[in-house]
Image (tube, rainbow, N blue to C red; front, top):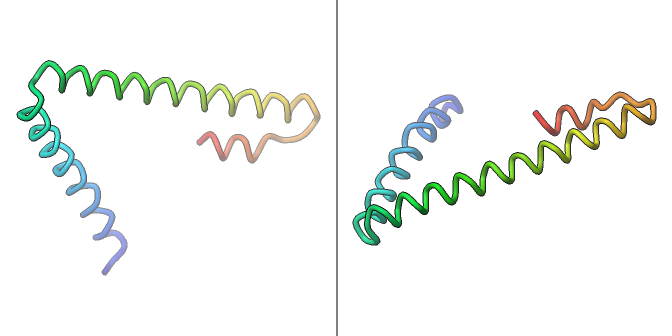
Length: 78
């Protein structure tokens, strides 16, 4: 299979499956708990992104302070 078709299928079907599962969970546990679950997981994701971004920034600054180009840190943070 063409890799572009595979990526296209993944980018189309994964969100459809996710929305379907969100609706199923919402009908099982209710609207308010589902919304709270979505908000909680979003806050956890933002927290993880923030900590990883700050960690990458600190590593890049250490590399610059030691006179090295922080190429790996910049690629890792991208």
